[in-house]
Each structure stands twice: as structure tokens, then as C-alpha cells.
Image 1 (cartoon, rainbow, N blue to C red):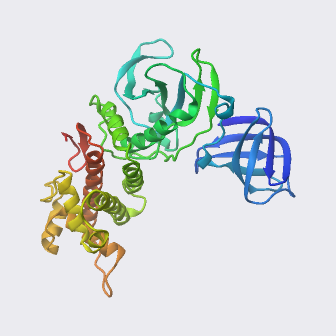
Image 2 (cartoon, one colour; image 1 turned 60 degrees about the vertical axis):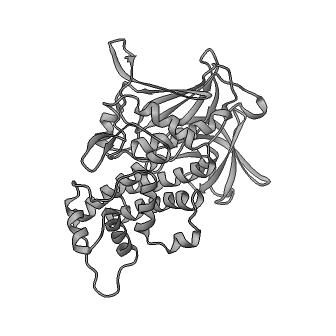
Image 3 (cartoon, helix red, strand yellow; image 1 turned 180 degrees about the vertical axis):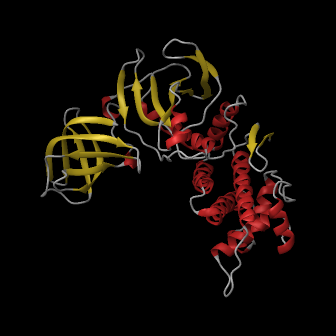
Amino acid sequence: MLLYEGRLRIVQGSDAVEGDGTIKARWLPQTKIAFIIPSIVFGFGRFDECTVELVDRGWSCKGTIESRGYGGLRGIVDRAEGGVRSGGGPSGVRVAEVRAHVPNFLRIRGEPLARPNGNGWYNGRRRVEVAPWRLTLDELESKPGEALKETGGIALTHALACQRIDSAAFAPDEVDEFIELLDTVLSFCAGLWTGGTLATGHDATGALVWEHWRLPWLSSYEQRRTWFPSYYVENVFETIVPAFAKASADPVVKRVLRTCLHWYLEANACHAGLEGSIVMALTALELLAWDELVNRGTTTPDSFDHEAAFSKIRRYLTAKGIPFATVPTELLAVDAFAKTEGCADGVEVLTRIRNRTVHPPKGSFKDFPFPVLEQAWRYAICLVERSILAEVGYKGHMTERLGWTDIVI
């Protein structure tokens, strides 16, 4: 996706070079914003940080030189800096609305939207208010999700727009924290990394007055299961966003939730295999247990460290009202394994698998049967989903992945 074409000036310390070039958003194999100046070959700069100046626009951003040679001077824009911003800051630009696209999100059922060709309508809009912001999330009518199922990759499936509830103009930076929150919520709902990309700011007439080359962490599309009952149940999205916003007002809880989201998404992808994914899911559960029992409770750090993993996870689940005392009836292989191994419940089975994976015994090693691993993985993911929902105080529908049924928590 072409973002800029024109004069580029690359600066490293007191050295600088300039030429005609382009900046593009590249989605695969890794999402990044890349620049190239084809006319500049050998002889400039280090493979190190630099400043990228867009001469024609008067903008600049941080970047890194990755290669130089007959293919030109190439590098990437630092995604930690969020790309380039026009306006804002000293220029004092203000906007009435910030818009962005969301890749690889779920189908949503909501308010009716007219099709672009005027031929009918479809249910594709959700609205949420989290003071002082009003969020509108629209599913794109082009249905890129259908192509994603065939090819994978990344496609822009939804558009979001953020305005103030009172319709007042605002500095674009003011909405940064809210959009970062949406990255977390959207990713948790989709079961993969997604969020608001390539943001733009618009004045009251709709004219473009600000631009931010924003790329959050993005996952290539996969058919992943998720707790979110996206298509058939109303008001789930309208409930989960304010719930996350309220919980994230505490900076420690916000950091814990974001870290747990990382472990949850990686475990849900199962790219590390079933055993590795169970390890990651339990990492999330132990972090949540630490925050509940140590940070907000009376357990000392030393006592927590010396307590058996299944014991502290049990205490955490009990505090959050999440059932675990018996192995769920859908987990027949896990139940049989628990009885054979002398485990009291499914939580102990999970920690037994984790411990044998991370600390294999000396001598002979017994592989876990696949049905046990697959069911234990689903159970671990289910406990993490239930735990995150409990952390934010969510009350409503969810798809419970043990029996793939809709339940109300």
C-alpha cells in the first residue's frame, strides 16, 4: 500500500542524503512500513537508526536503515513511533473525528448500513460510548473475510471512527489511549492480533487534516476459535469495550491484561504446539493469580513462589467465581488422565502437563496422548478467557469452547 511518493531525506547524525523514493505499508510476510530510495546505492550510512524526512510534506519520523546497494537505500519506519504524523503538536491541528481500518476482524451483526451501490442494506454497524468517546465500528460490505478464508493473509475488514460524545473538536493525540485500548479489546474478541491501522483525522466537513501511519501488531488470518459470539448475540461488543476501559483505568491492571492478552493469543494460535500453548496459557493464569493474590491480596511473594502452581491457580479461580472443581464432562480424555495420574481436577492436569513439558524427568519420558493434550489445551484457553472476562467484570454471553455452546456468565 503506497503511503508516500516523492523526495526523501535520510539523516544519520551530521550526515544526510536525499533522493526520490517511496514509503509503503507491507503486510506480508511481516507487517511493516518500508522506505526505499532506488538512486542511492553504496556509500551512505550505517545499518542503524535514522530520521526519515518527507521533504514534499515537511514531515519526519524515526526509522532504521536495513540495506544499501544496487537495490537502493532501504529501511523501515519505526513502528514503535507509530509512523508519521502530520499536524498535531506545535501546529495545533484539531479534528472532529479520527478514523482507522481494522484488519481480519470478525463478522458483526448490528445496525443496518446501506450498500455502496444503493442495492439494499446489511447489518454491520456497532456503536459504543466510553466517555468522552463515541466509537462506531462498521463491517465493510466488500466482505474481504470470504477471501481471507481461502487465502489467509491480511485484509481490511472493518472501519472504525472515534468522535467526542459532545461533538467538540480535539487534538488527535487525545484519542491515542482509547485506540490503544481498542487494539486490546478487538484482539481479544477476534482471538488474533488486530487493531486500528493507518489512522486519519478529519475536520467537521470531513476533510483530511491529519494522518498517522499507525500499525499495531497484526496477525495473518487464521480460522481461530474465540469466546466472542460475534454474529448471533447482540450487545456483546457494546458491553466488553466499556468493561475493558473501566478495568484499564488502573495502570497495573491495564499492563496485566495486555500481557495476558499476549499469552492468550499466542496460545490460541497453537503455533508452539499443544504443549507449548498450554505452557503459555498457564503463564497467563499465574500472572493473573499473582496480581490477585499478591498485588491485591495478602499472600507474600515468597509464599506465592513456593506454592504449587495448581494451588494458586485454584485460589485465583475461586476468588473470581470460575468453576473448576470437577473435570468438565466434555473432557473425557482429561478426566481419565486425572484418575490415572491421581490429579484432583483439570487444573492439576494442566500443571502436570506444563511441568513435564518444561522440566522433563530424567531417564524415560512418557508422551501425552493427543486427546489429552488437545482437550487440555482447550480447557486452558477456556480458563484464560473466563479469567480475563472476570477481570474486567464482563457479564453477558460467551461461546464456551469446551462444548462450543453459548453460555451466560
